[in-house]
Image (cartoon, rainbow, N blue to C red):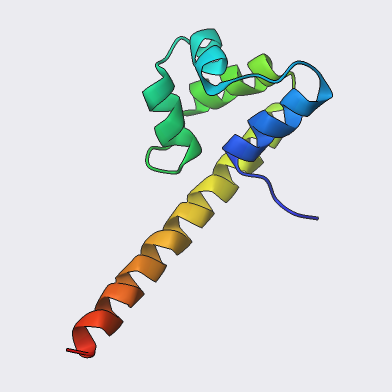
Length: 94
């Protein structure tokens, strides 16, 4: 089973009914689209309160939102590590 990121969760839930844009979800959460974008991209972590609000807004269990947040963080960390490795290799090649 593939794990979903927060962004993928929002998009998948939208497929069940009317798609929910990032802006619409941000409004439901009482935050900005920019903040939600950072959370979805792993640049910021969602608080437990925000995860509960995301779960409520998407009509999923809190555990689903928590799992998606953990996957988002895992992917962001892996991407950051890959960027560091690439930078190191580029400097070593000089």
